[in-house]
Image 1 (cartoon, helix red, strand yellow):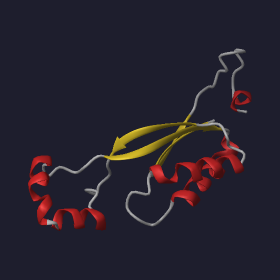
Image 2 (cartoon, helix red, strand yellow):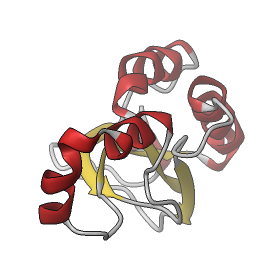
Image 3 (tube, rainbow, N blue to C red):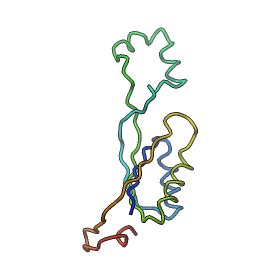
Length: 126
């Protein structure tokens, strides 16, 4: 079993949810997170904000540090046989070829236990 952690743009959440469901992977957990990558979050919109003289005083108060951006973290556990399908689905929906498209981490999941019945293993992933 594989644990897939995908950090995506908030605006792509509904499309990702539908695509995963259509791919036969409807079970996952999502939560709001804050973070940043290598970049400073300084896209075209940010350049417009910092070039406006009216914003200079406010920007001094915020400081020069890179900004944390709101994202969504999707967590799903899939059998080894569905790992590539899950990854490809997430990439297909979220890839814009721009900075901030997100990241996907794949980790070995050692076990899964259904609390209600005590069942263990891949059977709990349905």
